[in-house]
Length: 157
Image 1 (cartoon, rainbow, N blue to C red):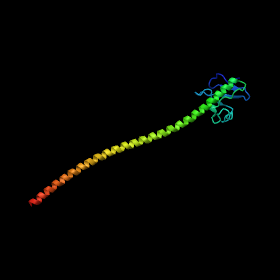
Image 2: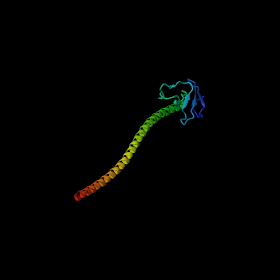
Image 3: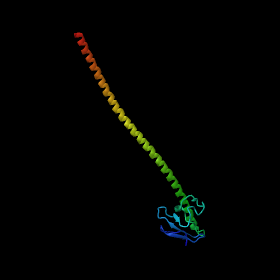
Image 4: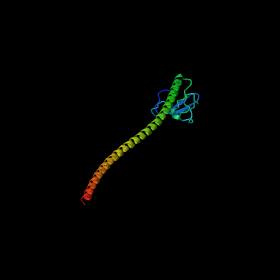
């Protein structure tokens, strides 16, 4: 049986090449990527496809070496697996950047709230200061009136 062709997700594929193996295709959007039932967690191609650092779910099917089309499909799968790995790395970097930006946004919001709170406090203290100055002015005027009254009493006695 050939290693290439149209296969439904979840179908078992067998290759009758130099090393017969079985695979199950994933049902995820990453079609043509497979999970190897007979392999360890490393690339069976020992880095030949550049996917030695990837998990089983993105390893390309090994080619039937006597089929040119199978070799082309294998190379395409290797390229897709490498691109998938790069996209995964980029997503991880973007997730980290997202966390940093969220932290900065939260800090800016906190500072903004602090600034708003300080502005409210300033307005309240300014109003209190105005009220106290008015009270002081009234007290000074009342004191002056009392002095004048006292001096009049002193002068009439």
